[in-house]
Amino acid sequence: MPSWSDYKAHARERGALALELYVVNSVPAKPPEQLAAALPDHLAYQARMEAEGKLAFAGPVSDFSGEQMQGEGLIVYRAGSLEEARAFADGDPMHATGTRSYTIRRWLINEGSLTLEVGLSGKRISLG
Image (cartoon, rainbow, N blue to C red; front, side, top):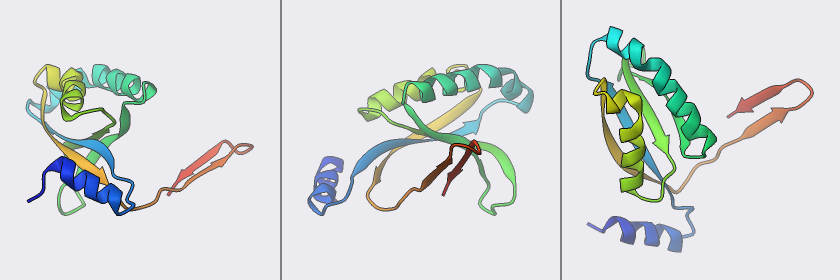
């Protein structure tokens, strides 16, 4: 099995983007009322990380049926290393207080597309 750096180099040789991001799966570790108490600080942290260009995406995810919300969240960071991304996750008040726990993985983006449409006069933004 190739190492991470070998795989990334091979992807770039094939002409792939090989954009490395870091995916955090965050799950509740304490009762819902404690989650609610930590939410304002968590949201402020996420807004700061976004403003600094460190947060790519974040939000809740459904269960495997796609129908129920069970409190899990997905956070995608831009970072220079796995260690830096782990420091970002550790700095989230939800994780720092033990209200939520997380796992973190590297994500190498090779394929796909993203469309952004901005309607200036209508103040409309569409992401597809």
